[in-house]
Image (cartoon, rainbow, N blue to C red; front, side, top):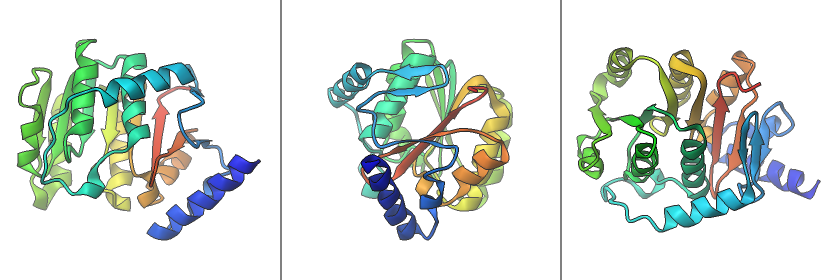
Length: 235
């Protein structure tokens, strides 16, 4: 009960900051978690507290290159890093798509983790300089998008990639882009594939997407924002 009240207050303040009513979703069909410390059970995806702790320790010990010109507010937080590592470990996706490279931390976590399972990542960004963070990785292809026609450019490139096992969104957080990207990802995800999104609190796109497709997603509170993920055909 106390955690539910705290969560509702947190959702209210996060939602109020961006002008959306996130607190109205606290008692919805979405599965809310305050953190990963107590583990996670979502469909057939089970993460124990010990696994979450080990993933945190593993990631904190990684020596990663970063693109220093990326704005500080673009960086991913602890729960997102941990969840990303754990989903890759558990699901072992072979073909992944990431939109938004930013400082490159999430990109390298994906590349290092998926390399163990012969996974290959396609990353998309409007900043060509972000390619610097992954040049040494052989299981990576960087796609720079034309800023003036980014959506059309993304569609053309995605059509050439085909079906994927995991899609990670962390790019344009406007409602139109998020909602369009979630629906695009859902169409090309294979059964059992994972759609993971950072910053779902910046608009109501995630919740409207899940509502439209009758999906029960998992929502996790990070330090200052919300993460959402859903597994195709999980329930």
